[in-house]
Length: 450
Length: 130
Image (cartoon, rainbow over all chains, first blue to last red; front, side):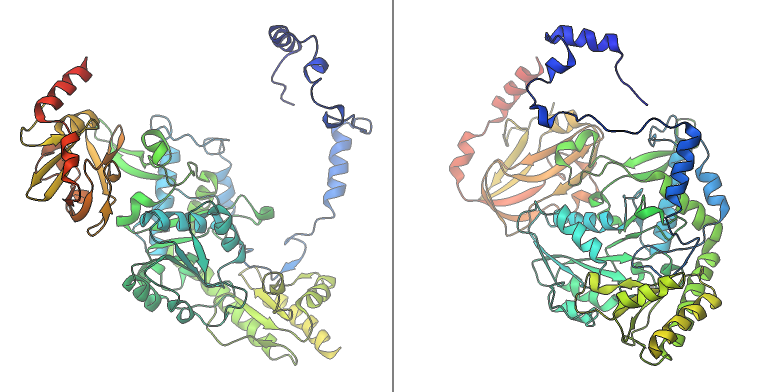
């Protein structure tokens, strides 16, 4: 335990302020609000404590023990052993990321490589050093667009099938912004309208249009035409991506997107209770001054040798503090490193292979599920590795059946879309075997007979 | 420090040049010298916009500081220097010429009376350097 002050130091401080004891110091705090007496059991030895914690942890059920078809923003992928091996090196595994170029060439180079990989994966010109997670990155995209128009455009058009957590985070994040209005994802919004459903909402007051790719329901749309029409009205377009899908699909850069954000967790980060994850944020060169966070650049030192430095960090710190448009100073360097090792190891071909495995397994599963009486796929829009199953029972009931058979079912969409009681969002990654899919379908067969 | 005689100046180191009813605004040689190497210029007003004296029309950022440029006069913006953001170093090399920031038509020419003449600005700079 870390105790910042010794008994003699405390005494010295009390003397200076003229209090006889700690109790006297806190005299003005009503007794009821002071730290209570803790009714703790006798202390355990380290050995006993470990045994007790292990006992408690057996109540956890993870993707190691169960087969999981749960996605909805975080995905169970295989992480090659080398990712963790690099991550755990003492030079990288520090509590704080050192950015001083004099001492941190390795860290800075790793971030530079990360940025290069993300720019290439998304088809954009620049990437920042990363954000906390996908939701933060989406919120920062709103901030970026808002300040790009200096607050003069106050509308954000957001697709109703952007991850609900991202939409909620963006709203929370920007609640203090004058006049900023979100539209497009009202409770009665048409969830199947695709990009065409958003175009009519984009006007000359719109700062940003936010879409997801693949969308929250797993569907793939080409946003090229939406981007063109949004640009014609002067608005920017942000695309929230699943990076795994970009190993296979047309990039948002090719569609003309202004900002690409997304959750980088699928790139070699375990599910770990929802974080720390990795916020991807990339943009075009002419918007680079508006991007939040930091950018590492490659330069040459006074000896003419290659060197890495923070090329852009001024928006938050140092000289522009009072002019900052974002309060994000940090990045998730360790998570960015994990994704860098993952992407480097897989390479362009490996990334494509993972995406293809996901795609084909998901389509095999979808085909099998659709053949079970009572079950069907909702809609026929092309999808990547996630799709909605319309069930004869509520998604919640189905999940309970599946769990009884050692299977974590999909995401119950009714949690965010109350009308979709019988709709289960099912994700299939390369971790799922044919046998797993067949077992999943056997449970569905049982439900179908009931 | 170069101070041009046909311009008017502000205490925050902007200059304004009036030709007919059009005013051109920039930052002074003293200002660029104090800021050192300029790396970024963002003009924050657009043609057609009605602007007030003392409101911000641009941000100029150097390797060591960032500064807002305030308008010395009120009026309607007619033109902004579109070429400047791509060549911010021009502010260092030609602050009174190519590095003009904004042109506007004056809405209240009387505002010019409150600004410093070249001689007054020179005296003001001397005073500040002590």
